[in-house]
Length: 365
Ligand code: G3I
Image (cartoon, rainbow, N blue to C red; front, side, top):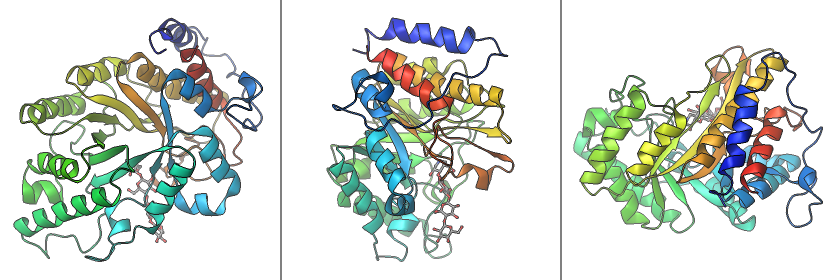
């Protein structure tokens, strides 16, 4: 199905990225989300992302805010209807699952995994080793390097074992490199050296041999110093027999910076090393206020990454980092920027939503 779809995808890429005059109005957006998707849909207009992604052979996902999932019924319905994978935006991170040493709280993460099972969705586990959102008890003052290694090992084994058989992908190590390709200075690098990455993958594999294990980062879409560093690292890990199976591209874009033109080339070189690839956290922010050209550029950003995924050979999922501006991390972090997701605060689709759905529909023909 993916091979047959290529001609159509290329045609759409040409139309949306090159053929549209810069002054054209953005494509018309539907005024509401489709009421239903799946076997009861009445036609393409009533078809949500999940249905068209299924037909294209691609898993489509979203990060999930657990407070919203519990308290916002339309949000909850949209997560179930529009997506075939879910990622915990925060509740699988170490600070959430082990706030005190040896005291685990899996409740929120379990609720997401149960929701996914009830809705026949896969789960992307995010994230095991990171420099952010670690519990305060994990620090260099409290432990020797040797103890820190044991603490990290226990964390990985505990968490992956808890979800064994229920998590499809794990983002095992997150954001290892700086943008210039040097190693990021973290508690793990300082105390354990570069070998912590190989160790983390081995421990995760030991705890769940079925889960696919991913590296994950931002600003690594195209061929650049950071993705070059990952490429060299993957070669080393593979040569040493380390169980690394995926290259995750977060895809946090901004309309003012555009989309790297060599994203597909980059995915392909990792796939040639034997890895699966995935877009794991896509959003496309803009300086506020939004205007028609920014909104159009946003739609093109979302679809450019989706097209790269559909044109690649082993790109297995495309996940947005939140699907509505009602719950988005962007305005809190980037002053004066926002509107980064495909639906606005009222869950009304923007042109980006229609563009994603149209691209998936073309690929699934
Ligand atoms: O849990 C506390 C809550 O108790 C407190 O009342 C509240 C007050 O601000 O803060 C809550 O913690 C927040 C946490 O999200 C959970 O909601 C933090 O302040 C906030 O900084 C944190 O932000 C998350 C961020 O990672 C932290 O680095 C975002 O929601 C989340 O979207 C973001 O996700 C990351 C990916 O994991 C990795 N890639 C980049 C991506 C965007 O930064």
